[in-house]
Amino acid sequence: MTDAQKQVQEAIDRLVESGVETGVQVAAYRRGELVVDAVAGVADAATGRPLTADTPIFSASTGKSMTSSVAHVLAERGVFGYDTPIVELWPEFGTHGKQTATIRHALTHSAGVPGVPEDTTPEDLCDWQKMCAAIADAEPWWEPSTKFGYHALTYGYIVGEIVRRATGKSISQVLREEVAGPLGVADELFFSVPQAELGRLARLEGDNEPMDAEQIKQLEQMMPLFFKVAPLAVQPSAELYNRTDFLTSDVPAGGSMSARAVAHLYAALLGEVDGVRLISPARLRELSAVAIEGVDQVFGNHARMTLGYTIGRPNSSSPESSTTFGWSGVGGSHASADTATGIALAVTKNRFTGADFSTAAQVAEIVTKALGER
Image 1 (cartoon, one colour):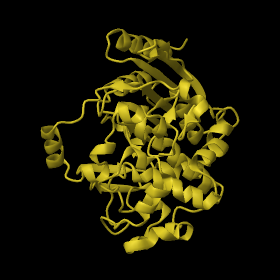
Image 2 (cartoon, helix red, strand yellow):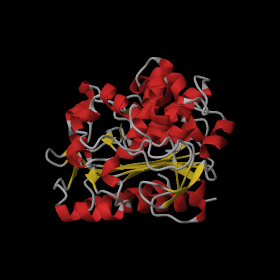
Image 3 (cartoon, rainbow, N blue to C red):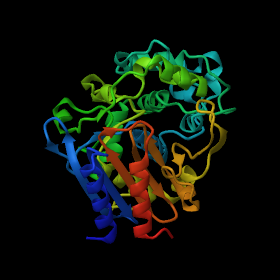
């Protein structure tokens, strides 16, 4: 057992024993070798079903790790280029001045369509054609590429429809055939989860109480566009993410995964893992470099993004965090890769803690220190 494995296991055992967490998975690769694979707690608090290393957990925007990676693997195969206009593949997208948007703009959240219709329901999210038609018909909030803002829900449909138009296959099928299958983790990485696999998923638990009027008012004052991006009926919650119709549909702004599988994916972006490498070193340099920087139009904060990923680790301002690309998901999950250290890390959990990433931050700190930062 490595020192990192021992320290992580002790940390997540404490978190579960103290009641802070219900179930936690942590995995880390260093230069292609799995060096941490730790798990604690239960997958379902009601039944006591144990959490195992191969249990998929819905991990919200951490699933964008898979969405972006599918796009890069297809670009590596020459299926499309980053500067391919979206309308070349999806002509209907070009309405209302969006015809200049490219795949690069989609990946950097600068395509200008971060919002969904205000009456969007959970059932609508599960209707691929309806969501793509609404996005194609949307008026952009800004001219593509002139600004950027987090496309919380629309990102998955935009990239997913580009993938579908380019390949004739759903993004779930491409994920399985081009990414998860070759990596040997096809039963641990999902957008739409097959019905037969649903019983393996962890059940999320958390505060399912709806926001009261005062909370909604405060959020609207702080982030006026918040409910245009994710209307009240489809706000992130354990309740939404436990729905069978949601889990079995393609909503590639999120995904279900084990920590081990998504860490494996990031390790295979960094380099070779068990004889498989997803992309070339040149593409890795391109996708991990800062691609856009400025004020996020949705959240109002200063942000930097690479080509399809955010930069940094949760709650970290340390210099080495700037060489890290990945995604965190509301609820507290995180997955990323550090080009400087060769470390790929993932933390998944089933207690839904909103924007509280303290568990992921604590684990990331342990892993980076134990494995040597540089």
